[in-house]
Figure 1 (cartoon, rainbow, N blue to C red):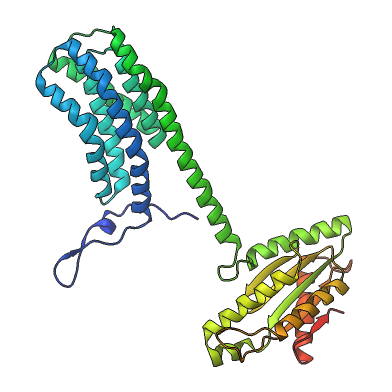
Figure 2 (cartoon, helix red, strand yellow; figure 1 turned 45 degrees about the vertical axis):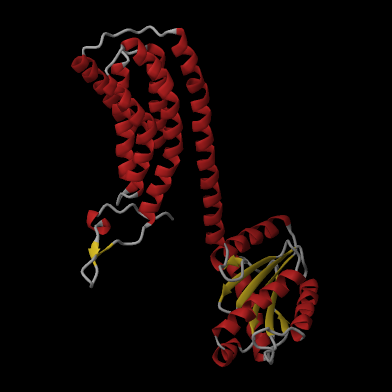
Length: 371
């Protein structure tokens, strides 16, 4: 159902156009997926690092660090989130680039833990942010890799700077960290909810695409036959009436050859609309392909199905297609009521098909019932 992630790096490399200038291939599914992933990470990163600027600043005041660290802090909190997005959005493989950015986040967070002397509350807030981002983005594997990188970078920073480890946090640092600890999980949950909602909508659209005919909106043949099999079994089990119809547009090939395929498509859509307006909402309409339709009329004897088709014949007689008013739509219909002699749903379908050919052989523009 979903496209494979392509690992051939040559697929993503720039190709050279006939004019000699490099031509960038259009984004593929893997690239678009990577961009969506990077876009989801962008907001939590920007907000989270911007919030952490204040408790880390309070901790740096206590450490009396050099001015270069302050410039580094400003760049990390307010420039790096946007730079990370630019790097991912312009990358050939945005997903891999964003995973690299997340690992960079972990390394930089470890640096700040070391520079703060492992100040307990800002370090805990940073650890919480990194854990949520890493686990949410890449699962256990990325989480473990990120935590290891954060731990190693903090130890290296302590070793290189000679900063003394002081676990204690001042009251100001507590007050500055509390909003981060409370609000960041809410922000992350909101982003996760938005992602889950979009995935659910995408799944719904895929389900519709897999069961519906693209032109008419009724069920496609594969899904309609599944519904037919289920209805056959239920009617046999509970001894309910049901009638099967197969409908075919008369001389459809002549319409296509004379007026063009656009008029033929218009005829198919017009017949679909007439069936939907005439039949009940519980009747299951499917397109078999081309100009052939099939309908399952649940709880309906053959007499009611014949009456419904008479109304369709009557309405089609006065219907005119906008692109070809000269064309009059005519249909042939085969009807097969469900009987105890039918042992399989395909026998039921074949019975309706035989009735359809009986209608065609009898002159078309008529309804025939299976014997």
